[in-house]
Length: 267
Picture 1 (cartoon, one colour):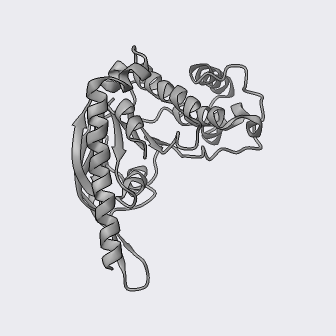
Picture 2 (cartoon, one colour; picture 1 turned 90 degrees about the vertical axis):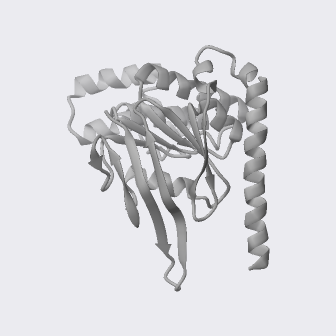
């Protein structure tokens, strides 16, 4: 396990009609091992592009990402991805979804079964191993997606709006689960979200990205994730520091959105 380093990363998409889209420009940062990072920004600021580059689904136009002292050149077992909709095989059982990666690697069946039970217990799905995945609620399916990612023991967990489709109560419970997993595993986690409150609660560090070309606008070091391990999240969200930081970031993003709309009207 090691740090993730972004070294002057830029990404330009050729749209095929003579137009280029500058999704990211000169993005540099170091994400330390075991840190929990949340990323916010207005629409079109390159949040998902950033995540897809780190996952290895895309290659940057310029610059590079380095993880464990090696340049990221494609998908790898050192990174695990949790998508907004889980991307599960709904015709398989919960256990078959969770152990899918290990079965593809021909891992020992007995050891794999034990690991499945362990992770189902951690994510609160003990006893659901034989349940067809399509019978689960959205929140339970996201728990399956988390277990499927974590059972492969990646160094870095990437989450793209993993809680965005959930109702408010389920989302709160899943936020607590993410914090629990972070504490118990010591994994490095990077989460993309559109929710300012969620980014504040989950982000030990928080990046606010500026609109196209996407770049890091402001960085925060926050106490709320560690507080969330032992305190009531609702009390944290009502604290003076949380409210003030939330309003500062909301104003920041609102001003960016206004600027984007103004440029669109001029164009």
